[in-house]
Length: 271
Image: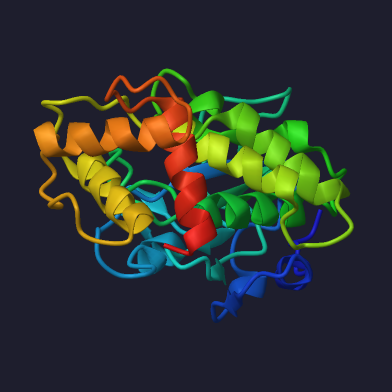
């Protein structure tokens, strides 16, 4: 099959912001018959919207480019890298598909170690991208997978993303009449984001605790908890208060249910 030069138009039809990288229409092998799509994270630099673009286009030592068909920047911008086969999935398979010629590659800018939480917007954009790609090649959401599902013994990407949830989000965007997310889609995205976050309790530390503390401050409307990245007694008290306000058992432990409620509250507030 020839290169798929309709990628950019299909992405735009899904309401996405698209940048066509120079030369994309002739980049990648024309030995290409994609039916599925593989979701990746770049494991690239922490700063910048799309710092991995050059590598995705040109490749790296031992692996020539292109390394994906579409790179999604942190702000949701979709960089169309290649219309032909890209070197991205490698050995493995999913749903009876094997080889890079059988699947599109979608790289999403993220450090990939769990310290950069996926946002609701990023889940929505990723689902739209995969839906746009497979829509012209059978339209099967079940042939969209995470790289860790394609090659479970050697890959972890996209870190923190549940493949089953992603496939449902893609399915909704394949069948929905509008590119705008529906309430049901939003609930699925909230659940997906929450499921990918760790359980936190007093004594925990790190970037996820900072995200929790910033969220509590946003919901309360004032800085009641210092954003230190350390889950201290003050943080625990405000977590319990947040849980009481939402009829969650006030344990002070932040699990999936508490994360879901906090993400939803911030979404409503636009924070």
